[in-house]
Length: 405
Ligand SMILES: *Cc1c(COP(=O)(O)O)cnc(C)c1O
Image (cartoon, rainbow, N blue to C red; front, side, top):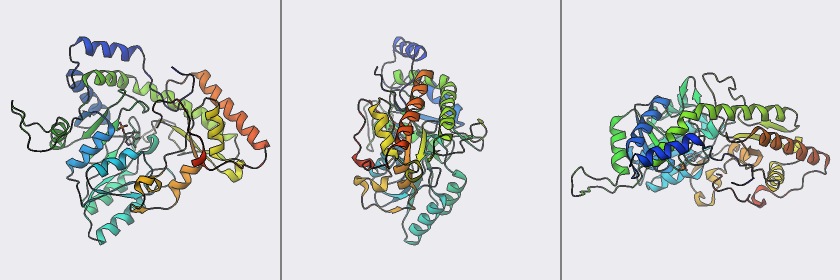
């Protein structure tokens, strides 16, 4: 353990220990097994899907989801620029070309801009092989409009719900949107298997083909016959056991994160130039709600007298992990020159936004400490001379967090 207060560390305890022992003692140490089958059924029930396929990561789930829709070289896939690199990387694995679309104030894909991008690409005669929206930081995207736009383009929707398990939109659970969707159980997500992911769909053929591609595309014969290139992407039975224990605690863990959100909301009300990101957040737990994965604030440097990067540096020095919102894909060196439809919002959210420790494992004392530190630091900054800090890119990266993306 370390004493740094992290953004979203794994939250495991006796239930997970017991689950791992159960799986080990059951003799299914190999990938696949009864824990995987049960985990798939339980997640499918939780998200209201007919089929769930447990995989080794959310990235693997994105990759196989795209392959299922026939995405390949020469195709374009329209996706959100405001996301973690895995979304874009999976598109590249297929040989297709990603087209990035900017976000609105919620951080999710701007549906008017998506509409424009799709019309443009169609006018140019490009085949849009898939649309991949992302539910940013636990808030479900506007699938009503996305589905309508995708329908017009004849493109399937693969929903990247890696960050949003447990959230709802208009009474429907995250993961239930699109022709297929994916989840991540990476260590920093709202629940974890230490590493893992899932593909969700209502289409039995998609589920079958995903299982087949994830197990090296083996034909059902004794001698290992292969007619296609496959992948080794299935989840281990031991890890699925951890996932089942986590799923049993998920609603409690989300409730803890919600409580943290409300505490930060109170804090922000008293800080000039600071506002909550993504408000209103449906904190009543109603038919549209966040899963509160990460709570982030937006800082207006003119009103506050200091910038997000200054606060980030002070907090990280003091052992509190704080990070900017995702750096948009169209600004990443690896995706330089790729086609994008920008409106400046993702860039602004990246430079003014800061995610704060939000994990369900955080104790009341740790949360008090974080809030008190933010209050002290911002008061001191407010009293000090106008902000002269270096831009974000020059800020030293925080240390010691094993996987804090
Ligand atoms: C975490 C994440 C992924 C990737 O999931 P892994 O399980 O880490 O491969 C994909 N998309 C988004 C938006 C994520 O946050």
